[in-house]
Image (cartoon, rainbow, N blue to C red; front, top):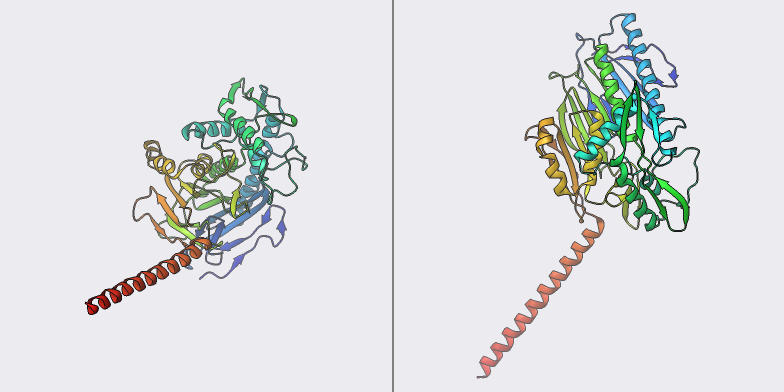
Length: 446
């Protein structure tokens, strides 16, 4: 095995740690919370090196890029550093356009504009909104980027300068919101499909819907606010993937937070593919429910286990069901999409989490999904706490490793039922025996 580590810099830069290491010496796992890329060891003769960097606090999360190559010359190493610097700059630029909380961003300006306003936006924001509206229509509104106020109502949205709002509560994790706000914001989110896009003379615009809502006792007039954070990270992964292809880094991957990945070839496996394992939504960080191999694809995963709190034993997460205006509660606790674009995958996984099991199964087996070649898996948890995996992947394409357990109250109910049944059987046996004894004594008397 190659032991030598090629370190270009021992300093931890603002954008991450810079170093070249042999693929054999590199960490065996590249974590993306739900998806893990498992790199096999390589022999001395290949001399494959890994150059990776992690960027922190972009779109409120972290992003990791990894390049696998020979890097035989100092120039090739410098080129890699310069390339990754460019990736970092690109991500920061996209964040300044798509962030909901950076003052002056396209989304900030849209949200700050009055109802019916025409707002100039960048080409990138225009494309992301196109994706968002397409998936909104494709999923019959199950994906809806217009639920910003609902997300904020439950304490999961980003704000600028920690501004205060009339519906704020002292502690979101112990107090549920007023139902009048839940209803109002759900109705407001339905206007997302009325957003209009326009382009003229090389400029791009979005026209905000006219819809507004008011809540009894609150003088504020609320108009549509959007948050493209999820689909925005997916779009960023697509942009970086295009940069990797153009630069010729065919063996590489880019992981954005816990939801979006662009996976290219693997230089450390015989089949050129990565082994992907997807996190068990009710397990710990190293437990997973499904494994598959893939290369040159985009991957997205959403679930209710990254951002959540519990009140009265019920889980409230950051994924809002557009039909109810409240956190998802249809039984699907995680969803994964492999294939297509990372932007659309991000929107689809969110939509799948908002669907009923029947809707999700119909969607994953729909003709459109088949034509796009998308591989989908969801985990459904029933009222007893039992989890089941549903997927459109063919047999042999995946391996399941689900760690199932029932809710603690279910075990208590089972114990009580066993005791009740045992007592009932005992009583029945006693009654039957007494009747037999009585019958026998009557027969002897006669």
